[in-house]
Amino acid sequence: MRKDKESGYSQRVLWPELEDRLYEDFLERRKAGRTVRQRWLRIQLQIQFRQLYANVNPTIFRFSNGWFRGFLK
Image (cartoon, rainbow, N blue to C red):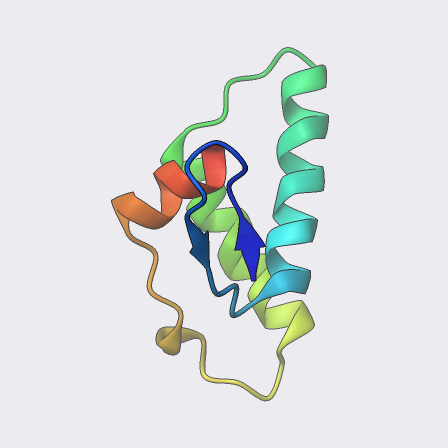
């Protein structure tokens, strides 16, 4: 579980490796001065998910606005 220090809210992270990779890609893109939009992140998520979890059906991951906002925090 990850915990938000300010609010004390914690949530269960189901795909920690995926989120770590996406975060690294996100930081690299921002460092290069590029914008990170929801569409870009969704595409990267699909690519990374298939690489990391080749034996898992990718449709079980729910990409929602709430997930996106939480990821950006």
